[in-house]
Length: 431
Image 1 (cartoon, rainbow, N blue to C red):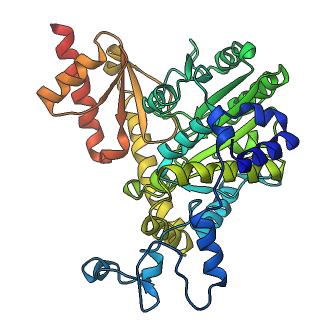
Image 2 (image 1 turned 90 degrees about the vertical axis):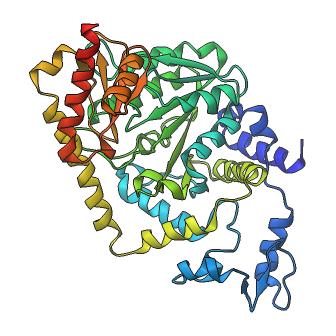
Image 3 (image 1 turned 135 degrees about the vertical axis):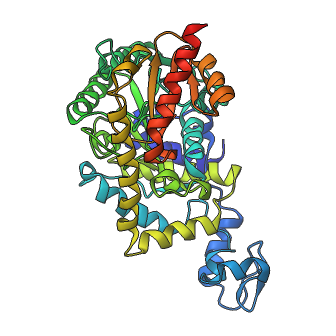
């Protein structure tokens, strides 16, 4: 093991041994090397004559560029686009995102978190969490209504033992007791990673204030039983809250909850600011120990340096400039209201009595999606039938569920969409 990695481990162990126990074998080996990037950063500050350290080409004191590219981007300084970004991301962007997090999450006030580190969108942030904390056989606990890519990120890549529990109870409520039971079943293993995704993909559900309080208390009680927990909040659809849900991330309520609980927030501009192709995400840790936050940041930078080196500089600049704009919140809220209006229209459409013959809707109050549980036909059979006969695309999940992204259908077209889904189901019932 490299001495820097050992020093980071000692730093974590002395501050909170439970967090050290949560690290995977790879997580313990990780460190940020004092190599070219560190030397280049030092030279950037002190080399006032010549800086011959970093692997870029310069011209007239600026990064070299092609006019055919820059002509379309001429409002930006070349240094804001073509230079490498630091492994942890552009400092100003990280600070702006942290300010935004505290503004949108009142429960974070007075709590210590790391400066968010820039990732190549959320999938990369989740992958970092998997590398840091998952060894083969370690339990990953999450609900049965889940984004399928979790299996690749945590299961296939890192060998996690994927443990699911029913997302909804038989009464159609959030199944908090099922979550707690699934966690307690891992007690003999000593550690687990709990993955929380709200607004949930695929169901579009976020806990109510009462449910959120009960979830946090259940996690605290599990920690009191002696289980070390990494709790990852996948907040991909954060901010798209349309009903009776909480209007913030559970990350804030979990911060400083218990010494055995390490909260991790994975979020990003990807969906929050409607820039899917920019691939700008963030990973943030919460701990009352500055030494833990510092060490985890160094290990995360080591992962980034050893995989993608850094996230694209132009995308970071574009997001950073948007966050600084006086028009940002007005424009963002306008788009959120459009999605909200579509969600409320779906709720109105689903009151149609005859629809209850062919499906049952799962509760939804946020995000991009909602799900239907089909009563008489198989989800995949209906999916292909809708494509082939009606030119309608939906996502089939398991035996009976279909996911509908109302976020990408105009409000005045939603009635036709659900009518065609209904008609497709009735076609199949007749066969």
